[in-house]
Image (cartoon, rainbow, N blue to C red; front, top):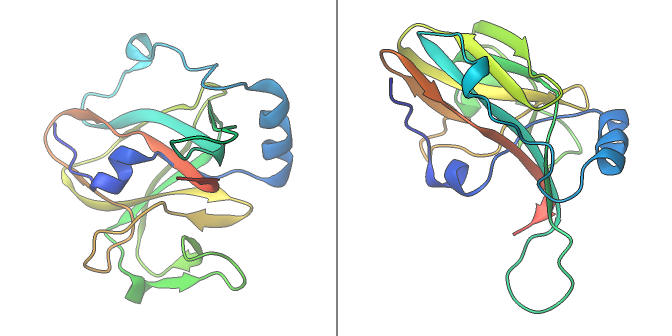
Length: 170
């Protein structure tokens, strides 16, 4: 199965957490520690699997202090029918990547484990993938056509990693 995602997704993975989760993650993760081999965990034969991660700090190349950290996190993962900005209610007082809700159908939901691993059985189709962060829906990027964090599921299974990056500078 193939998943087509934007270059932005390839550059940065993103997903959501609560304030309590963020405090716990800061004390338990250093650098990119905590990622484990997920191959033996995969049981889906049709759908997606991957790792949810949280990146924070200065991730800019070049001189100066660099405190960039990427850690696996446990988050609620939600898959909606392909959703555009016209079908989304943006969260007030938040950066553009946060939404209160979508008017499209919720297709599937799961929670990643402590190592960020998740998997979902999904039929072939076009979807929007978000995570729950601070009680809101978080998406890291769009497709340039108004689509929010799009994924395309084909036949079989595919790895789709999701990074939460709103606390990082790139």
